Length: 463
Image (cartoon, rainbow, N blue to C red; front, top):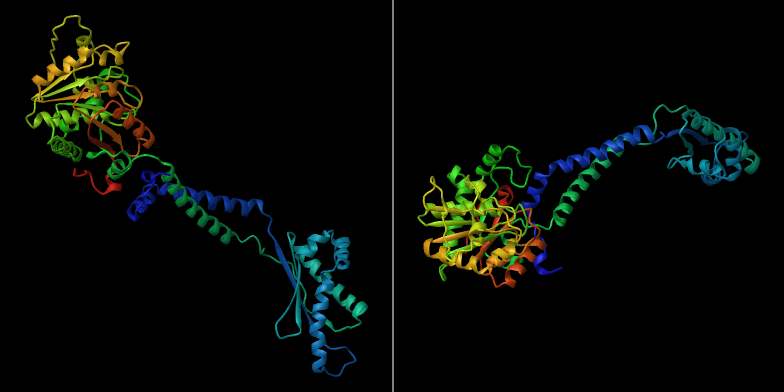
């Protein structure tokens, strides 16, 4: 793993991730605890434990017990334990109750009461009555076998085993609690795993560290049209959806509008050493917000007093005309295919936005890359640079077609638009290399759809 690919997560981000995706923790908890309850309640057979207590006293003909007799009795308890767990006793129980030999030996237990001559015999079984019957039978068996093998008759039954009413296993509360705790840990682990495999940009610092491009603007998420989603079938409704994304014009006091104005300011700072009049706006993939960035930046530049021209050079999926609500019958395609040597351009003037002019894409051609790479395109840009203060050129995603790289090679600079939490780092690297291969000059990167709750700020100061 390269140094640039190291994932950094601070405490605030960790808390944010857990709060944002709390539903995964709840889901894992409910599934784990619910599964444990269902399995414990309906699939695991309850285990019952029956127990009898016996006492090692003195023989009938003994008047009293000496210290040596007590020591012998303590040793006898050990002998009785081994006898009760022997194969011979297991076979007796097997013949009488049908309990398997290994099953019996695994479930029978003999233990002594500390500092006394009491010892208990217990047996665990899924059948509570059989558990009690087995224990009582063992008490009788050990009395007989003690007389037969060791020749003593000093075992007396104190408590006869009764049929147990409540099972000792499984412990429903403990199982559900442990499973619930596991579900919580699993949910937290799943959230961080998803974050680890989410190879997208989240913060401006990641863009600069990975791509080596200054971030000159960060645009927070805002309520707009259905970008990247299913479009409305009705033309009027579709138009309204696109117009909502012109946030600088529709809601100039919005946080996002302020972010675009800060982008404009940072763009000025980035062009102190060299004049930048033609800017290509592109992105690695579809849906990163390049066109939204281009049109809103154009409006902010126009409102600052600059004479701005927006050219829709996305000759594959043109959208600029939608955002400005203008017609697209004739445009860039018509200009580039005109056989006349003298280039005549009649940009559409946006009447409600002073200083803003638009050249739409025009009809979609069969060979967009060749048209953009033509000498006529170069002449058009040179001519427009004489008439306008700044030209914003919207192009297709550079990570998918070569159009943007072609235009970037003949313009003053390129602005790479990336979407926070959406643009994959691999695609961004590929797009950057594609632009560098044509010696494109980066004016900076813009990070859109920024989650302000996560980052704690809405804009990134250009330095």
